Length: 120
Image (tube, rainbow, N blue to C red):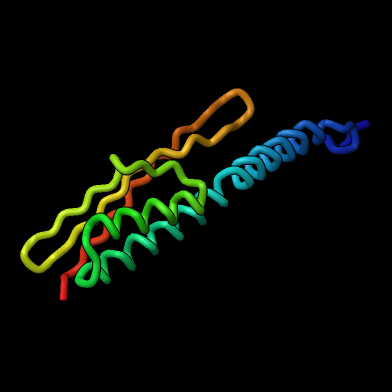
């Protein structure tokens, strides 16, 4: 007598693999999405500081970026911030690495934010 494969229970392995992949994807999202949101907030602050560079000196811009990074719990160091002023333009670069802990593995997520604007 011929039976369907599903009647013999052979389809359960695929379900277990799919469930394991779903759990792994959920863990990755749980660890990485909050970091990405914080990095986006810091990027917005960097952009805002570059836009208002005509009213602020480099130390004030640097301090504002460091304060925001500290509030967001991002590991930005003073050495990772570069501010360059040219005749009528400012460029702000911020580089940092966030360690993301997974069971048995630590991923080092590197960020580089760049903002360039004219100075009025």
